[in-house]
Length: 197
Image (cartoon, rainbow, N blue to C red; front, top):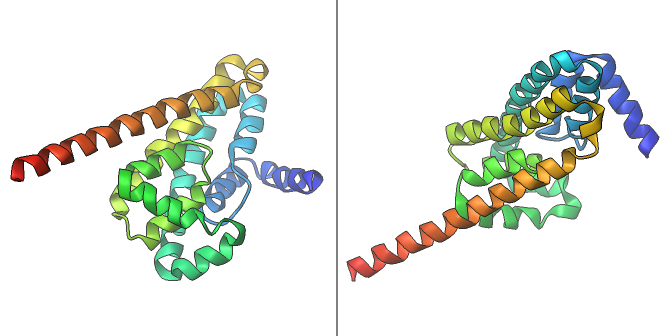
């Protein structure tokens, strides 16, 4: 299985920037391999172009997310269940996150290791505002890819083993932000209800 994945990544890498753009695009809607692996490999080989690679990933991952959004709109739940047979329960979890956090849930999904394609397709199913979806995707994906690229550009191979820790640390900060935001919204909601009574 690993050899198969290496062969796929090797093919995309042979296409250089075009391969990176293609991988970032299809991963956001249907493909299982994230572009991070190729971004890391190419940034280590050409550190002077790391930020360019991050920009390519950001743009095409966001564009790919719009394809996932379209799949959700036109394919609906049947397509979601077909694509994620073993993860069908994700849709209910995503719906709960949307109910609580709205488009901010897309930002978290775009930045954290949560499967981004699950959120892009679900966003179409639940008819999330398209502009909000696109903006949050761009910000979230950009933050993730540029952090990875900047770390590799500055520290090279030595930071590679710690990249996941860096991403996890920032993810925890984002989760903490969501918790505070949720509690703040609940507090404001309870105050509004009490004032109307």
